[in-house]
Image (cartoon, rainbow, N blue to C red; front, top):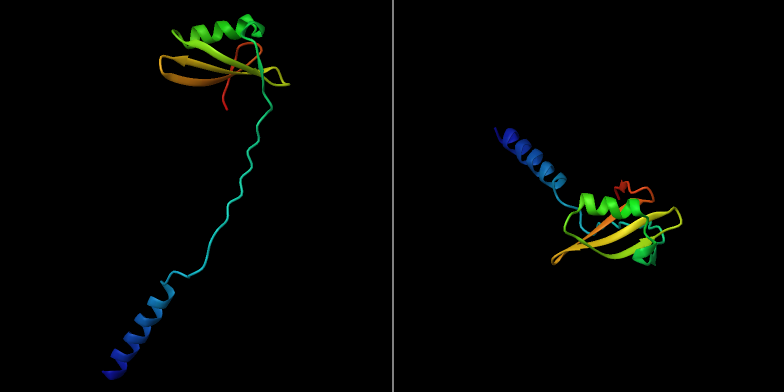
Length: 98
């Protein structure tokens, strides 16, 4: 009987050691944000197709700022009241998901 109790205590003690959280382990996460270079352009330089898409897809909004990159993609900052949104489109007015 003593051997049964002793062996049960040894097994339970061994399991509790395995469940312990090791101290001093830390993980490091490195992240790189890839962003196309957008330059601000005047709202007059925006193609009509892009303006039509914004007016159709986002009614009652105001075009605040327009940015363009080397791939002829547009980053549009629009607002509706106190809410601001960022929309990406190509030169044909197709909305790009980013």
